[in-house]
Image (cartoon, rainbow, N blue to C red; front, side, top):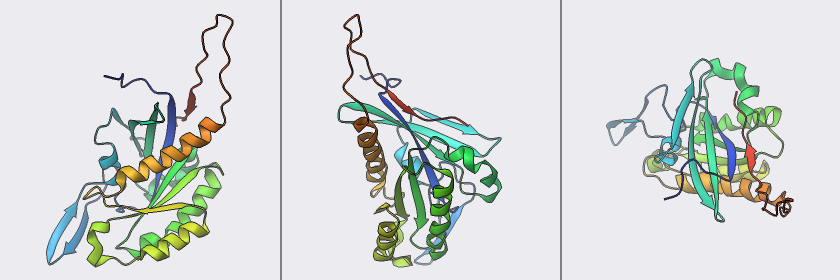
Length: 221
């Protein structure tokens, strides 16, 4: 069995978007919807689905940040994702610059049943451009596709916005797991290819032992 503490790459990924779009690992408020005259309270989230086999879940309660980690394999390399979330609440906006620092990937979420969360995407894109690296890999994610009968944001509309802003696009359901793995794996794979392409072939040291190159793209607050 592989050592869970071993990894070749460490990438900081951030989650952005309005509250109650289904991204937080520990929701700060109940997400209640009505479906066929039935009151539903949703607690499952995109992050909790992806990190269901997590090695570690930590929090920075004094600044309202939580992060979780998971390691996947890409091209025989172990890639560890450290996924950060602030729950999108206004009282945490003061830590924005520190939150984005060192991030090499971002998932920007909205709720396909709530047009207001999609309208806010423009604001989140502007914040990314202001505080994050210009080379950050960004994926627009339309969540809660299991509530198709309540959909208010079309796939075509969101795909067009993503294309106009140089982002990839995917729709997910944290409830039934649809495309959640694909969303994170897509971002991590794109980051891995970018980072690994920057490396030259390692040269042997004087002891003729190969040097190992490890990219550590993460900064704690």
